[in-house]
Each structure stands twice: as C-alpha cells, then as structure tokens.
Image (cartoon, rainbow, N blue to C red; front, side, top):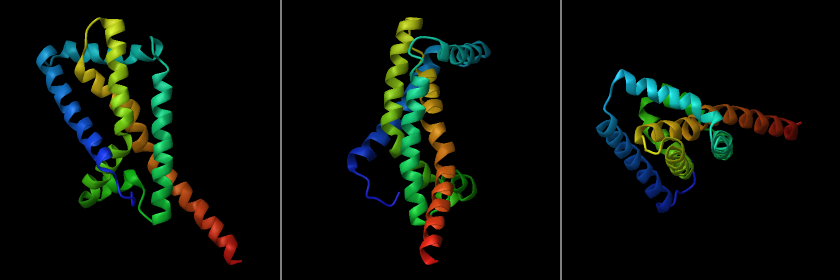
Length: 168
C-alpha cells in the first residue's frame, strides 16, 4: 500500500496479532493438544456454516473482498507485483506485505473473533480460543490473501487496456 497508514490502523493490527497469539496460548493451556482436540476442532469447523450466525461465513469474506479490491487496484496502479506471488516468491518483502494485509483486515479479524466468541457461547456454553483464531483467519485473512493478487492482475489488465485505447 502506497498510502500513509494511520497509527490507529497499525495499533489495531498489532492488537490482532497479540490477541491471536494470546488466544492460541490460552486455548492450548485450557484444552491441551491431542488428537481428540484436533478432531473436535475440525468437527466444530465443519458444523459452523450450518449453525447459528452462519451469515458471517458470507459477511466476513465479502468485507475482505472489498478490501482486497481496493488494495489490489492500488497495487495495479503503482505497478507492484501481485500480493500472494510476492509473499511466496520474495522473502525480502514477505514480512512487509503480510503486515499490509494484516493492517487491511484487522477490523474484520477483530469482528470475526467477537462473532466467534458469541457463537461459541451460544452453541457450546464455553470458549475455545484457538478455534476462534482459526475461524477468524479462515474467514477474514485467507480470502484477502487469495483475492488481492488476481484483483491486481485484472486491474492491471484493465488499466493497460484503457491506456492502449488512449494511445490509438
């Protein structure tokens, strides 16, 4: 992102990172790590889209898709390489690009953590912190990671197509 990022957005991204790490540590301390825990996590993950609050499986990816659209168009205009490709192929820029994505998606991740807390309270009468982090990541960060690069490519094609018509 070429725009100057506000201090609030940076603090929110750091909060998401610290909160996610803390929730995973708390989750491991509360429920340990075992085969039965992993089986429960996967079963719970598969049951969530058909349970209460299923709208978040549409809401969160749509929100991050809009963020990926904005950031992908900015990347295309500035001539930057597609997002996921840069993360996978350029170790020198990997950290900064992941940080950009975290800054863009931090609000949605926080929203996802809160929604999963409510879901778990309603359905399980307990809280599995690591599961909340997994769900928030799957619904908020993974779609952003997968969409931003293709959006950049399409936007770059669109921009180049428009500039080619102007030169005729």
